[in-house]
Length: 110
Image 1 (cartoon, rainbow, N blue to C red):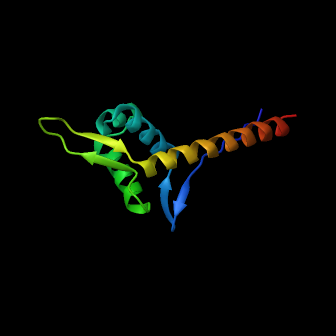
Image 2: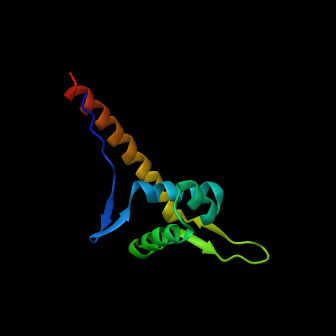
Image 3: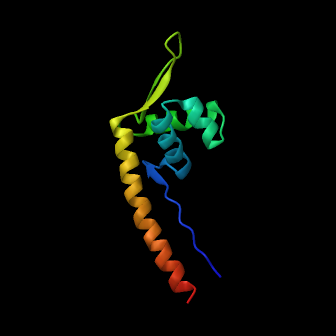
């Protein structure tokens, strides 16, 4: 049985803005409020997670995550309104791609 998989990547001006891994990280930042916790759950180092977020912030027209440094009150990370918009639009794309993939796989395996 043959099975096709599709993955959504979004480029802006030739630079990679959105990947499934970056979306997963954003969702976990939104859920946990912590880049460190989110990076552990994704299975990447804090440094790599920060580079992923920094790349998205640099490429996009507005920041997707704002970060507060730690200290006595603790730090944190917050998905911005623009980041939330990216997550919402990506979820719509995921649904469309999933429906297409299911239909396509059903047709090629008849």
